[in-house]
Image (cartoon, rainbow, N blue to C red; front, side, top):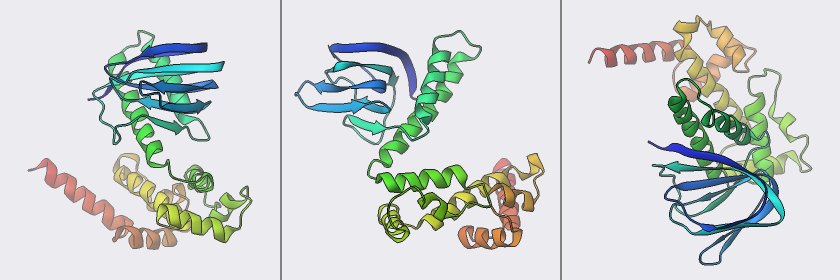
Length: 256
């Protein structure tokens, strides 16, 4: 099981001499810029809100002409879907930066149940990093559309065209670029995001006593009938049938 075994901060640093770790090292630049130089003299340039991921046993140094600040941590027992050093960029809301700051706080305090808290942060942070790595080839405009949809999908008044407004390109071009990079349209992504959230809410229906129309509203559908049609088209069954199937599957698994 992967776990963050160290997390620290550098404040206004210019040079870190060449070294290596037995673990994966992740360096998140919080201010300034610099470059990581490896033993074969290859380099990775980075700037604020970018993170450099360095595999175990790789000799590297960190240098900056103007100085940098960072949060850095090492992870043991991690097997990401890549083997080489990577440079990734945090999302626009800097979610990874926020998580790392909270993780840093808990790592350096004696909180109750600290080890389990760190394990939970490890899983979330590493899953986000893998997700960012998977989105590396998205263009800036496609990434912006995707982020806008994720942020606003639960708003019944939100339509895809709202995500196009700040992009100085035609709506048709943006749509075609989104399809080219993601394999489906922005509207398809919006509906799938809403339905995926609906599935999660339907699974907790008995606990939270949600009504179908309430779940529809929480997922961005103002019309329950339209929600049911989209749900059935996407999942293959109605919301009610989906709940009953999952109940039966859960019952059978408990009685095997």
